[in-house]
Image (spheres, rainbow, N blue to C red):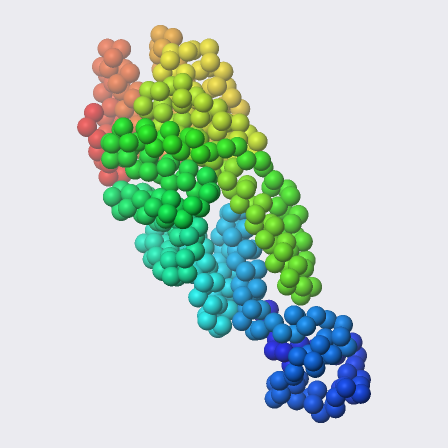
Length: 435
């Protein structure tokens, strides 16, 4: 736990650090007994005496006068910055420890705004864990305080987070309401943060797409497109700043700890913006592809590819898959194969499920080329791989696809075998589709 000191405790600690007795500190200005009363909190010094004590102790008057609440606020800020940095870097359990520390101080010293900020962060953690009802409750509790204190950016961010949660819960009308409130607060208060507005437009486009309001989905997709800009990757810089913040914290230098934790957080926020921008560009590209606006889709997917390569985002494979899908739609065999090779090169052992998509796209290319033997072999390879990896649903899908392939090829015995196997797997896992 970090220490919060009263005025008297600060004077006493500093005096001890300088190896001064009460008499040394008192000098000719005051009696040692009066100093003792100040140190024990039984007497409050005048401003003149404070100036004298600050001078003798070689410290600032501001440090001596800083209230316990202000110290607690600084400690909360430090813990909050470190917690958010851990969230962004994916270390949720470590982040939660810092959040609990911050909440402890905010409750002890009745710092409602600080508590709300940390409830928001806690909501972010539960969102990442897909525990949406708890996350929603935490965010709503935080937003009550943000609204009360007119913290407009926090209000908007919270409404966006609530919008994202309710999209995941498939509560699209609730999500639309949250995002509309976010947009209203943004426009009424001249926030001037294009990334926030871009997020509002993007998620509004997603909702309209889910609700099959295609015209609105397209309009909001274009609005989102206008707001996103490329942001530099500064991950290594962030790590060095983070270490500095931790070092200052260990030394007990809370001011420098806060200073460098803020710098760390700002860099991580920019880094997160790159990752988020890449993700949204990828999804916009996918969305435009589904609208059959392939030209616009390529613009977004190529931007997502560039950003993801720049920040070494493991989800580069998803973007390459979407690019390959576009080339397959255009029946551009040469470019389809080029991107397919890129996908194969990027797939590693940690990203095995992407290999299923690789096989399925290869199958489609084989079919466009009318290379039925190669198409058959590709599906068999895909099925064997899915079975080996225990990808049950994927194995069922591939089995059905292989059965249909044999059906179209008038190979009735093989068709019946694989169609039957696929249906049986779907029955076993509780999913039965009409084929």
